Length: 354
Ligand SMILES: Cc1cc2nc3c(=O)[nH]c(=O)nc-3n(C[C@H](O)[C@H](O)[C@H](O)COP(=O)(O)OP(=O)(O)OC[C@H]3O[C@@H](n4cnc5c(N)ncnc54)[C@H](O)[C@@H]3O)c2cc1C
Image 1: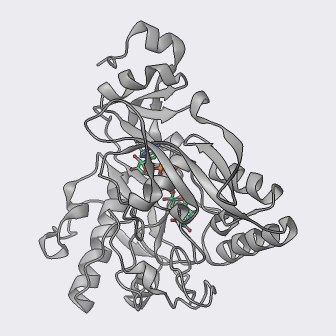
Image 2: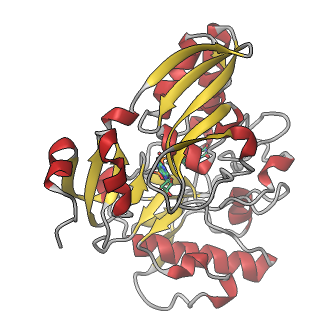
């Protein structure tokens, strides 16, 4: 079915048929009409078709079947970083949602502006980071944001919302589901570029030491159920590290990552592996694991209570790979010491994501 974009939209923007496996870090996902909104003047038409909005695809599991609706990415007019001078003693930096988060972090480090380097190593666009309130052991994205430019659900015109009126929490931006993030302004304190650079490098190294970064994944699959129980440690304790279904495997390096080592996993392989983990966590420990990774065009069971999940008797075989390592959760678990290997958390992980 052809996507419902006008000729003018197609001339000013980019519309193509693509497999989402090529646009997600999991390397999983079926075909879809993918539009890149380069011209801000066409925002209302993009919103009118109510498509899904895609950033870097680093927090997504996309089903294997064709997506029934177009997918929208932000392009040229939303890819910018601008220094806006000082306001109330802090330096204001504006960033569009299509901007790569790593580029924004590098810009701030070079300009001697502190804070964003604490997000080093998080793969994201600015829009995806705002939407997810992405974070590390040091900070969350919305910690440095003074206001966001958004389109709220049911509207078709942008507006600015002050950060102070957003009830942000762990992996939650505080705005209604379906809000589209167009950009933001950061309000930053000064810092020594050399110190900021070293801090960012240390964080990236800690992630590289404890996460399977060379393999396709969507990062941490589950939200941490509590500050005492990081999801990675729980999955490890359940003996599921290395468990494999089809092409999907619980990473032997970090048990809250599911990886796609052969780049041949189906979305259903991941769904069945998630089912197995959630059922086991509930049966053995009474814990309800919730998804941190977002799922598109996948079975509703990912949001179901574990007691309602189907059994695993059908489909591709379950095998256990040999490698087991005793590494701890270091994905998204802030802890007081700032040491990502301790797995001890501060109270910021206990809020619910959206
Ligand atoms: C190796 C690896 C390590 C990771 N480590 C971390 C980590 O330490 N901390 C952490 O928090 N996350 C981590 N993640 C997950 C991921 O980096 C974050 O969730 C990130 O914020 C996703 O951004 P994105 O641009 O890729 O968004 P996408 O994955 O493309 O989208 C995620 C969600 O945001 C929505 N979205 C995207 N752009 C917009 C927009 N402009 N407006 C409205 N909605 C939008 C999408 O519709 C979707 O619902 C990791 C992922 C990987 C693969």
